[in-house]
Every structure is written in structure tokens, then in C-alpha cells.
Image 1: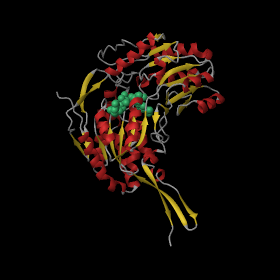
Image 2: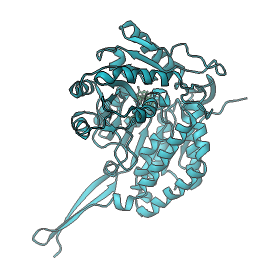
Image 3: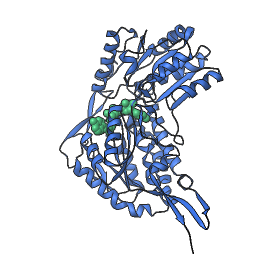
Image 4: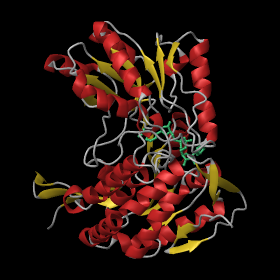
Length: 484
Ligand code: NAD
């Protein structure tokens, strides 16, 4: 039986890509090919931009509340299709079904937040800035925007951006990750039902050539990017060269600190989720576990026990705690990091290599992996692994913790477990990462707060969602007026 070939959604229609280059889409739990995706070319991008550009004047002139009403309807339609979206997501990405449900929930929350446009897009005015002269600011949409997104959140990440861009009057193009194009395709089938005006919202599948065509296109006004740091840097630089607005979110290496006074009974479940949820493939995942001083041995013992008892398997099985990693290539990369850790002298307490799940012998599984005696300079403690691999380090006090965190090239998120308000205050004041968890293992801002990091984890100034995103998608026109 022929496998499905993904189509682009342009100008309100499903159309074939004109590119002959295709990639394979895999079910990572089964290690089976399940679909094909075109690697879109310049022609595909041109068509989408042309449609989005043509749709802009009328969409821009549509009252914000009317634009928001499309989102209200979309929210309802997503609720109705909630479980189906989550199942497609797990099938192609691998994460366990409950995490997929959580991702769809977060996606919908962005739609909910964006419907506040009539408050969020308003501006300010002042009379009599000089004798008989008044001044007012007006937030105006700019035209066509695009999002380029990663494989680890196939549903949600595009929706950190799309609802805000649309509701503030812009038109939009999404380029999903070529590794997981089916979830966004499912989502766009629902978008189609809502009946947005043609060209307002579009999707083009593809890989780096597609991205380059977007970066080069003069009619794309801005790019919202999420992915690895090398790509994020590249996108940021190219947008600078071509004069586009850009927000570019990159990789991470997050430290989770356990102070000696932490409530371990309460902390343990969230620690396990932080490090092994989504098989460690979250930009907010814990990667370095830092129990401070004497609590080290107790945390190590309990964490190791909990990790050993995790059920790993097909994410569609409700009883499974951790699914496969996203692809064969990524599995090999993670195994390479584990080798490197051993070579550099870290002690492998729990070895996830060669991990087999009986029912799924071809799946891309890496078991929970824990290294002890890790030196902060080792590769496993410096580079992003993006897998279920934990480095244990043992700082002796808060200063050493802060030194460890602030010496990493990445500064996405950091968490600390303590019962001391003074320690927590010091931590949030001095640690560089932009998303801080206090007695929380995954410091994930909800849609109404900004999402993004610092250092090599973020390039730009306005982050994902939150209030400020309305600034990214609009220009503030200032009118100074005097009437005779
Ligand atoms: P990636 O950088 O390989 O790909 C991301 C997107 O960029 C994809 O759509 C891909 O098609 C495109 N792309 C890839 N290489 C390109 C190139 N050379 N030129 C132009 N475009 C290119 O990232 P990924 O592997 O899909 O995702 C995992 C990464 O994303 C991890 O580093 C993770 O930390 C990061 N991430 C960050 C956040 C955040 O909020 N900071 C959130 C999710 C994921």
C-alpha cells in the first residue's frame, strides 16, 4: 500500500509540492516508515508567500474581534479533535500519549491567550505633548510572517506564534519539521474546516532549502524560529542580512539543583519527569543533576532506583513512562555521547545503551542513563545531548551551583529545590537562564508569559508567546497631531 505523501496547504487548498526531493517519516517506536514528505523548493515557498501577501490587506482590515472569532472556533474544533491530534503526534514523534495530550493542551492555551487581542494590541496616547498637540501610538500588522519549528514538539511550537500573528492582522506560513510533518498536517485539516479567508494561513513542508527560500524571500517580514543552536544562530544572522524581524530559540543544557534542605519526597516524581520526560528531548529537560553537599548520595540512590523502574516502550501504551527517541540518527548521536562520557572518565551508573523493548525490537530506544563523577568540563556536561542521559555533579554550596550554571554556553532554564526563601531569592537573582523553576522540575511558562532563554539558547529580543509577542508581530506607528 502506498504511504501518504504530505501536501502543502496554500491559499485554502491542499496542493502538491513541485519538488521531487522527498524525505521519509518514521514511527520511532516501531522503526517503520509511515509517510513521505516533500522537501519544498523556492517555487513552493513563492506560492505560499504570494497567497499570504494577497490575503493581507483584507485580513488586516478585518476587525480584531472578528479575527479573534476564527480562533474561538478553532479552539472548539481542536477540543473536538484533541485525542486524535495527540495520537498522530505520539505515532510520529514517540513521546508518551499523556505528554502528547499535554502538548495539545498547551497549543490550545496559546489560542485562548491570543483571543485577548482587543486588550493586548491596544496602545497608548497622550494629549498636549506640546501646546495643542496630541500624540498616539497605533499597533499595525506588517504582512507575511513565518514559523520554522523543531521535531520535539510537532504540534505546539508553531502555535506559540501563529495565533498571535494572525489575530494581530498578519498572514502566516508554517514550515513543520520534516521529521514530524503529520501532526501539523492533521492540525491544518482542522484549520481548513474553520474557513479562514484564503491565503491567511498556509503550510509548506520541507527542509533546509525550504528554509533558505523563506529567508531569501523579500515579502516575508519576520521569522519565528525554534530548533538547535547552530540553526538558530544561522537564522538570526540571515534575518539580520535580509532585514527581517526575528526571534530565534535554540538549544539547552539545563541544571537542576537540589539543596540539602529540599523536600525530597515531594521532589522525586518531578525530577524523574524533568530528566526523562519526552526521553530528554525537551528544551526544558533537566540534563545536569546537582545535589549540593551531603544530600548527594541520598538523591543519587533514590534517583537511580526510580530511573531503573521506569517502563520504556511505545508511547501509545498508557502504562509507558518513556517512549523512544525521535529518529535512528538521533539515537546514534545520543549513544555517541554516552561513549564519549565513558571515554572521558565519567562513571556509568545506569547504561541505556543496547536497550531493547521486546514487542518493538526495531524501535529507537535509549534506556535511562545516569553518569556519576561528572566533571563540568566533560562533553556530556557541556554539550546538548537531547536524550535520556543525566550527568550527576556535586557542588558544595550555592556559589558553586551558580558558577556551574552560568559557565554553560546555554541558558534556557534552571531549577532549584529548596525550602529556603533566601536561597531561592539568591538563585533567581543570580542564575543566568531566563526560565527559573523553584521546586518545579520543568520551568515551562504558560502562553501568557514569554518563552525563551539567554546566551546560546536564544537570539533576538522578543521571545515566544507572552504579552510582548504582540510587539513582535506589529509596528508601533506614532501619530503626532495638531488641528487648526
Ligand atoms: P533543528 O535545528 O535540526 O531543526 C529545526 C528546524 O530548522 C526544522 O524545521 C529544520 O527543517 C530546520 N533546519 C534544520 N537544519 C537547517 C539548516 N541547516 N538550515 C536551515 N534550516 C534548517 O532542530 P531539531 O533537531 O528539529 O530540534 C531539536 C532542537 O530544538 C534542540 O536543540 C532543542 O533544544 C531545540 N528546541 C528549543 C526550544 C526552545 O524553546 N528553545 C524548544 C524546542 C526545541
